[in-house]
Length: 348
Ligand code: SAH
Image (cartoon, rainbow, N blue to C red):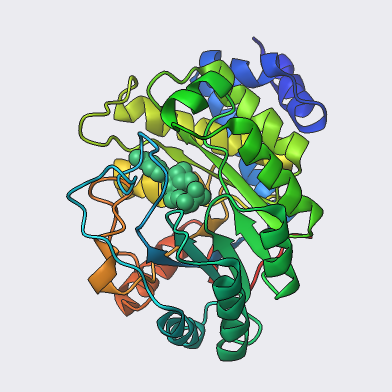
């Protein structure tokens, strides 16, 4: 394909993406075409969301889970895992400390743990707002009833993350026993309807996944009107090997980041922890130059951190409590003309 055709395809992807155009860049593009795509995604990132890299603190409040997802290390069948959960009072105290460090977005994440009832989470949201005024409260607690989401929204939660993981219904059903893709999508639609800034996402390189389904994932993000999209590689669990090599999963992660940026415009896209776990240190910087504009440092207290083991060897070093982490990050971002931002970075 000549350069003009390639540019034409990239323009179509921004205005009216087709499965075929997306698949071309996922499966067939040569090195020069990929470079052109990455440059277009980086330019669009600058134009739509600027040069700041938003920091979102993650707090992993529980590794109890009622689900049995085959790819996830904290699923209910992981018999040897020591389980923990953080009580509401401690979560609220931690939110104040995270606020003092400068963060204005807090992501509360956990396994699907029924201990956190609708009432308890409502109390938690109100407590965080008092302890950390102005903090964008982001929940990632799994699937719930619409009425529960409504209650949390009314209590002041701003955002919700719920990755659809794969848009291939057959693969979804295989990987998530007792779960249904349609129910997950209904949750995402309900969250949007209720006015949450809503994030979905996928894992790249799940056993049995096809590149066609990855292209469909991008079209689904657009159809759902997602405000945030987290696309990271599948990190292998012992006994559940990926079909694709780590290099292929890393490469596809960059392609998806760039295509998500081109298709979704001003969306927020993290350089995921899964990518930093799978690949070399410079992977995060590459991701930020190929569409990403968010980093999510882990602010879970060290005594719990290693227990939230959704995959092995999860990067543990990143935490802004570790001042050297922030300094090093600022320095490496400055090297690519970017800067750290603690601002809320809303998406309206
Ligand atoms: N229970 C919550 C949070 C799950 S953990 C929910 O369902 O939304 C957050 C994310 O970790 C998941 O959405 C999944 O995309 C990711 N994850 C789980 N296992 C993984 C693995 N082995 N490799 C990479 N990412 C994984």
